[in-house]
Length: 110
Image (tube, rainbow, N blue to C red; front, side, top):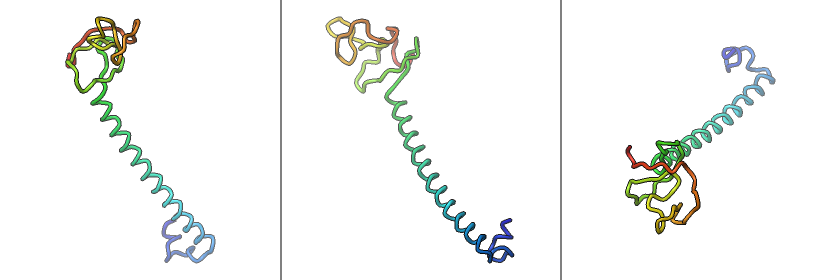
């Protein structure tokens, strides 16, 4: 088919063939543009996943996700600040009743 439609092919001089070939070029450009956008979105998603890998961990007891603060002692209670506030369970430095997560104790790297 490519030989029939090429510039030296017998069908090339027909108007319908030339229109079809022009359409193929614009379609190819559209596909290439969409592919570039998809590649950009993929790169952004990969960067986002790398950031999540650095910022978040999973509780070894219940598999709940939690954010790891830059300055931490490495001791965690799932769903709470490890040291609480004045002996009361806390999340984000604020006292809470009950909290979330399983409450399991662990250290990073366990």
